[in-house]
Amino acid sequence: MAIEVRVGEGVIEVEDGLVPLLEQRCVWSHLQPSGRAGSPRVYLSAHPASPEAAARGFLLDAQRPVWGSVEVEAERVVAHIPPDPFAAEAALRAAVLVSVLRQGGLLLHAAAVAFSGNALAVVGPSGAGKSTLARNAVAAGGALLSDETVGLLPSGEVYGSPFRSDADLVPTCAAARLARIVWVVKGPAESVSPVEAPEAVRLLLQQAYRPPPGTVSRPELTARAAALAGRVGLFRFTCRKSPDAGRFARDFVEAA
Image (cartoon, rainbow, N blue to C red; front, side, top):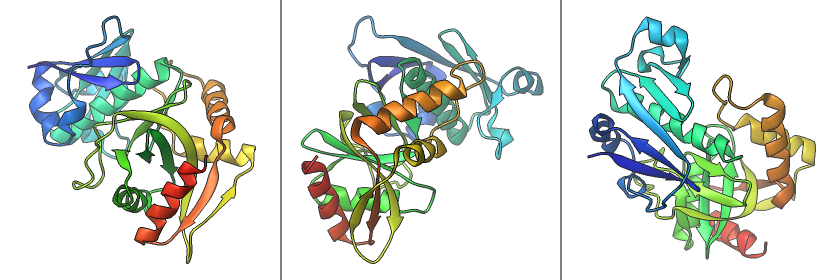
């Protein structure tokens, strides 16, 4: 059975053979038909990995070349991968990236939690506490979009993804309105402080997935980050590993 993945206003059609692999890694609730006729589509197909294919395309993960490579051909994303669930997940992420970029957005290594339809996007390097803050925000009444990968679209929508870092953090929300963007850091107490625009753009780009060659230029990606930062600003969010951090996040979003 083929599946469709919702990506903002777009749809990714995933070929049948990838479905059993993706079911092992991704959240099924996000892998279902969108019901949107006429949505812009990306088609993801898989073929065996080979050195020749790797030379034509780009590696899914430079640190894990065994996962294979992908080629972007108009509306098609062709993955050359082994029959491995991690490689299949990386291929789907590449297709999601292509779809988000074609809608004018950014795909970020980030978490996002929504309160009453208003989303807090949480960015930061690995180990900064994104998943921990997301878990505490969910405990404070939030709905999880993802603790691992989210798309920010120029419409102001935050798109949740099928991906997750922690198995117990299951996304329950597909999309919400962007209310706040924060750069999370660990500290002795909860606080927020605004980040100046140039630094905000730099931090967003640090956590943006790199566009495939020939899709979106670096200046265009920078312009998109500047527009998103200009919409709601970016704040340095200092917090503890505590339930209080989730309640603080909730109050911060509700004050937007």
